[in-house]
Amino acid sequence: MKGMLIKDFQLIFSNKRYFLILLLIMVFISFAGNGENYGFLVTFCGVCFGVMALNTISFDEQDGGLPYIMTLPVTRNMYVAGKYIFAVVMVAIGIILSGVLVMLGRLTTGSGPALRELLIIGAVSFVLFVSFVFILMPIQFRFGSDNGRLMIIIFVATVYAAAFIMDKISESRGLDLETVIEGAISTLSAQPPALIAAEAAAVLLAVTSVSMAFSCAVMRRKQM
Image (cartoon, rainbow, N blue to C red; front, side):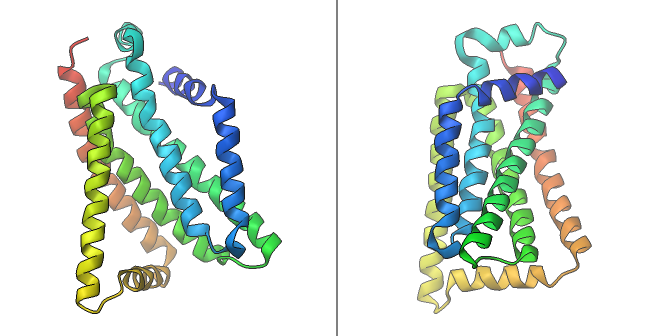
């Protein structure tokens, strides 16, 4: 398992130019807008690092790499579990890095979220983005690199279309979806930290269990 994680990190961080460009974009976002872009920065980092974790499945399948990996002392279930652990670590890195940049931006611009608000946003974003990646993980395992990428695009487009429709329905009923979301975050912020952590853990555990069951089933049936 440790060797699989090291392999994935080496695959991801081998493209140093890409990470330099990504870091520059993150720094620009954190210092732009007088510190008010923290929501977008957290989303940007979470999505980018989560997608990079998904891409390692495609990297493994290139040039017949997956059959070779399966000759190592690694079972198919261990391979799937390694991908899930790696995805959690990558999303966590993205969230933490965005939080550090937001705090640096706050020190420079004098505006931005308080530490408690930033921690809550980071925790909620972590659960959301990990859940998002875990929902996409069985799709990537099932359809492979090319078809899986197409299915992921279709899934993301469907989510955005559903969000757009919900926003229009809310407007027609005189509701502001953004205000509703902010109210939900405020309500969540008022809860004890232990309760917030328990709720997040319960949601993440449920999504992980269902997603891993599908992914393991797909890998067991996959022909090498």
